Image (cartoon, rainbow, N blue to C red):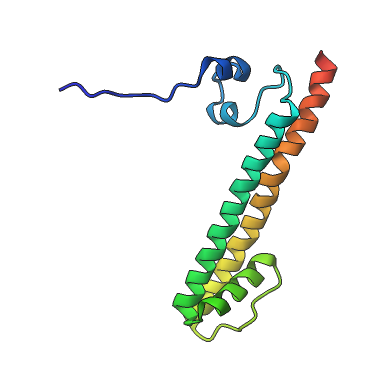
Length: 142
């Protein structure tokens, strides 16, 4: 029996803009410096995609924090939300943990939230920084 394998194929109009497939992930997200910078509409769509990914990460992180507080501390969802949101924002918890497992969870969630903050900031700034650097290099070379 022959299996039918389908590979994702990038349309030719996009392939021509993206250049050679040397870095597969970078190809899908950003254009090379040898290609013309995106127009405003395309750039705005890129910023909105990054903002949507950042929002999804924040919502997922809050949901995970709420689930942890509900499980380890037995808090109601409203109290779990307040504690998770305060930890994620860097303000600190509203309710002090009562159980040992809650203390461990809260410490790990605080460390995770710090990394999420840094990653989200990078995710939101990346398209803007890339556009500035791309325009700078494009104007120098063309």
